Image 1 (cartoon, one colour):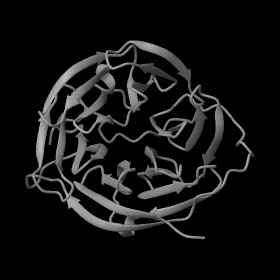
Image 2: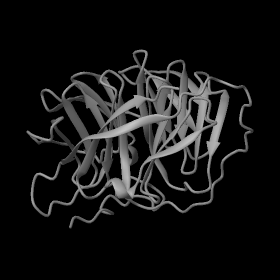
Image 3: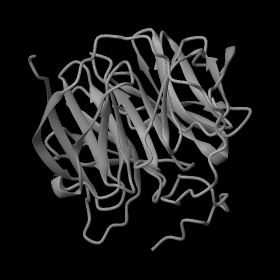
Image 4: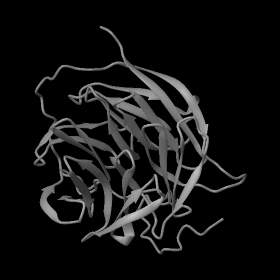
Length: 296
């Protein structure tokens, strides 16, 4: 097996399935008490389970995933590459990379942006051509990444967001509500972040709207939202996909280890087809779920 520490990464990072047990140094924020119409519960049904292992005994480390049209894309930090295939799991291909990929966002149907944390680099990749089209150097360790409104929102050093264009020009900076933010997504005119234990919903200028935290969940990894503003998060220690309402007041475990989840890491909601994509970090299994809002 390839030595996952070959790049001499700090022990406190999630890039290649390293467990983080550092003290939570987040700032204390009260949850906003403003009531918003709740959109839970949702109904989640398995559409298909996929195996993205192309070769027998292949070692994978899948940390992010997206669905764009009929194509699924995964970051494999064990082998420094992207894996992509059809949504039925067929026609598996790889795009080799010079850096370790970690977080990913869709720019358009043919293009993704991938952050490579310790290389302090963002790669713009054309998945149709299978090539890196441009590279952006960042001022610090770049983690969660979001493409929204023609700009990239990039978590830098877990404490700020740099909003930049696709050339890397920084447009503005957003201060984050915690010192250990990992992933970021968007919810209409709001941003949603996670650290290891909490979910934060903020305005576009970084003002906290609400915060969700439950002691059971101590290792949150990736976050996505649906069309109703519900927030979906993977927790690897409890082998769970958690969904939280758009006001941060209600939660529900929608998938667990009994459903085949084994340290789920990557997660992505396809808002066009209303499909949730989830991938386990190690075993090469990915899941497509149909999501429906239950009628009151």
